[in-house]
Length: 331
Image 1 (cartoon, rainbow, N blue to C red):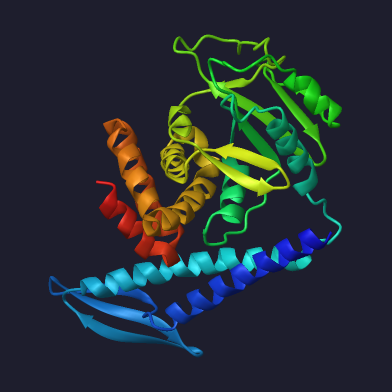
Image 2: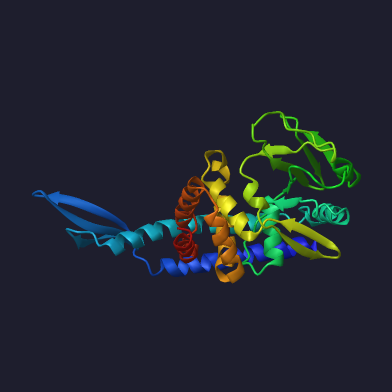
């Protein structure tokens, strides 16, 4: 329970800092809307804004200054972000303290995988739990994120020794279920555990059962980059986790954010990628790794990644400087 209270406190502090930063910046920006009138074939531009109970109108001129347009666009983005921040604070204030702490079941899984040397066989933690592990064990800026899904990448082909992974999870108290395509997932302790692997080259269905693991993982596209140059995090108490390199995670998230099937997760993907980007820009070895991975990507991937970074400027106005640096780096 104490861990949950600390997490809620950290999340609230993050959003209060965001609220202060946004309101301070808004105080320096012009407000209002540009109105235009055409008189005798000549267009005259005005800035209308509210001041107290009254609406004021200032004449701008026949041409609208470019910096005014930029500042008004920034204000619009920041006001939208402020609404999201205040909604998050409202939800945190109303969050009930008896919510389940998800730490224990995840640690049980990671500990069992460590003891059975599954990381050495090529398994990786991916998805949002990977991002949470980065935040806890790398010098990364805190960004509150709650997830109930633990996604585990299974290497294909699997070259480790046979191991009843399905049986392990059931011994840990998880229940086994099947997706409509025949792939397996497990639930228990307030979380859902899903296993994924690279889609076969011919794209055939249904997913292939891996008898050495007594497991049928879901098959997905675009996972190769996550297997490039992974790292191992020491979580303490004899528990480790193998995860994609931060740079691979960043590029993968930005690529996915531009895919139409990820529309409902676009904002989450972009925010995670940008916060990882801050780390990649400040840690020289990670910057080198990011550029090496970037150079090996196909042109289509690069175009979609840059498209997501351009969208990120709208979603995360407070991180515009970081996003600009990433756009300059990834050309």
